Image 1: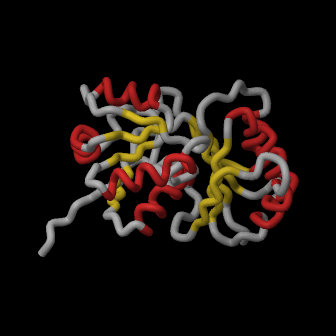
Image 2: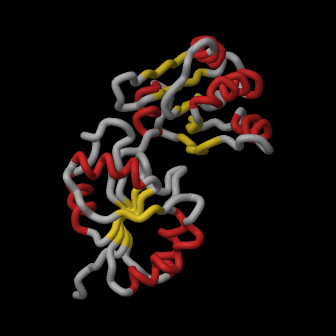
Image 3: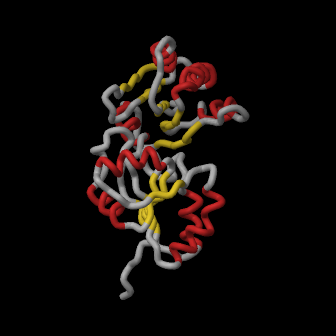
Length: 227
């Protein structure tokens, strides 16, 4: 049997606490030819913490289309790459899908390591049903935002959204308006960090809680499905 050779590793990185990385992930980051990083400065902090000296190359949403052909050619030639995002699992609302698809189409071997993903702890600790859920990522910032929220109001599964801190208040107001003030929701921010916080209640209660807060950190919103 031919020995399996992995060309591309998708490596989850901590979403806050630097200890939340697997031993296998550290081994991969040490041994690949190159780390493709969403932000080399952010990943550099992690690498320095674990004394990893592997070279990095910037790979993000603004340059991924231009690099794919070159990166696939290098992998075909025998190089091994690790793809990381700033936090969490690559490809989950972060760059990763296009390169993974191109590698599959080229017949290359890909491995995705298990690890941190922000929406999983937010969902499990929300107390909302986790047996059936739909992950919607970020809402549209402008066009289609209200239409999306109106459609989610009819969703019977638990809904998971990502949101930025400066748009959270707007999102909560719109959830109250288009999904309903009595629908139960949960908002988690700063997951795994010192100031981690989760607020659960009706949409109206959670909106009122954050109304006068100075909001920092990445946000996960969990919305109960329609009864």
